[in-house]
Length: 248
Image (cartoon, rainbow, N blue to C red; front, side, top):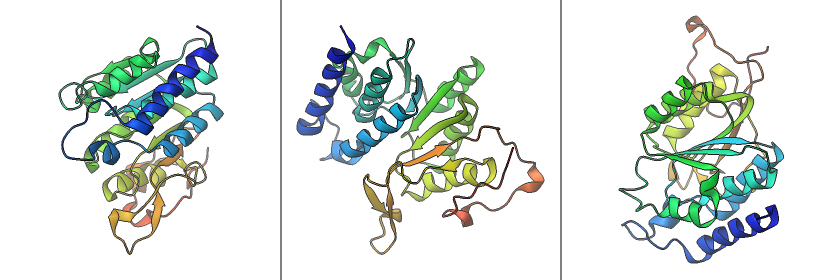
């Protein structure tokens, strides 16, 4: 099957998912609409990964598979010789009835995708131990602060210098605060235009608060930063800062 046929197959599955929803959803009602990454944000994610010519992506959280399908489309479009997509989701079988994985298989993406059904803290640690290197990562797993922080801690080692990490639900205080540590202390650089045209949410779902893009794209510095413990500064007070205080 040629690249055009493979892309048509993936796009068909993506289109059907966006229009009709998945064949099965969890309780409560509208779980798919609440959990899944909206189609326009998926398109922006796909376009960003294509522009970066990524060949290897780590994804935390599969659920209904919308973002995974977009990543698969990007990897297929780039048409690298050895594309690889690692997806981590311990709840895909018991909580999501394998619906996301079945959609990836329907799109023919199981040939380049590996599903790791362990908690991300375990799966990512094993990838570090194996010396695995990725061009980019998409993070949409647990939204508890300490678990987001652990995901980003391991991805700091897994994603190559100059690579990308994209986070979903940056409007939540827990995700936002975890990310700001790495921006403020490890020199991760915000790409503000990457999701400017995407879905916006008010911070903490406070109707009086600022509306911000749902997703946040960050570029790791070309020269990895490991600050001294003596340089620690409160990062939760610098949530709006996009400066990079570190230089090679």
